[in-house]
Image (cartoon, rainbow, N blue to C red; front, side, top):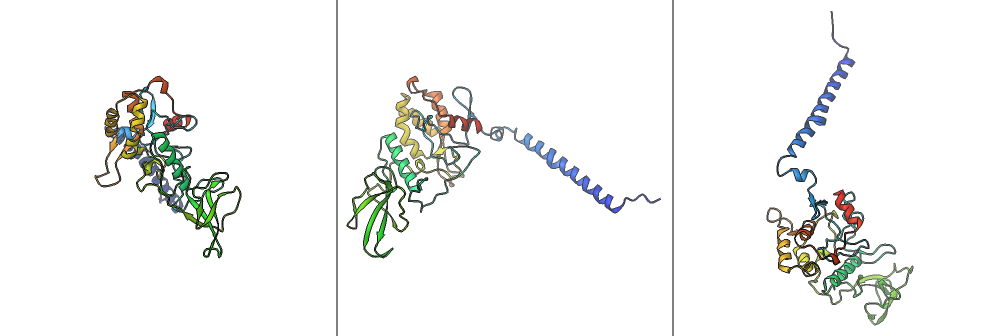
Length: 306
């Protein structure tokens, strides 16, 4: 008697066996092995999100995701080291990692969106005011917008200059230069079309090496980087020490402790982990109660969601 299965049934039986085998291997065995490997000392913390505990003993987020140390109005809390800007959601949102998608040619403000140049200029001025240093940069106006002129010429792109507008300074602001090529500079009128103007960024007299470091005014590609440069940390040291009634030397020691070097000794740049640094400051140098401002709700959300 022939007990061979029909070809169609034999093929389906093989397929079912393969599905069951792969389900056991990939759906059960592999996850169990990876979970067990994640419990190895040295890997467990990273596998669980590199969570950190705050000075109050509560969950304070992840050492891999930055946080905004600002109040409910978005102003810096002076007792904390400030992070770099972030384009991830409303700032350091782990579920919305993103860059600003603006490049070097973004120099003229749109109606509903400032240019990258104006963002950099405004941030530099704000950091300078906060730290008590000159926040001036090249191609920036004293009031913190991009120093860009719209130049109208007689023949479009050539010929005599007939009109000049300070594109990023809306009326009634006073233009950062009075004249250009002998023509009076106007402030920009709301709703006016300056599309025919030739865009001319003006270098100005800003320093070649600004007091405010580049990472203080630009976001990381992910919007989540918890590190700042040693230069930016150094700029903030005096303020943080003053707000906490601590010696600057003690604060500098903590900065050094939470500074990481280049990967493999050659890749990237040294960085200071702001999240870990601020937690250490709260533990070792708590601020007086009079300056005990708390991070905004956005900061708390990023901590809990990390």
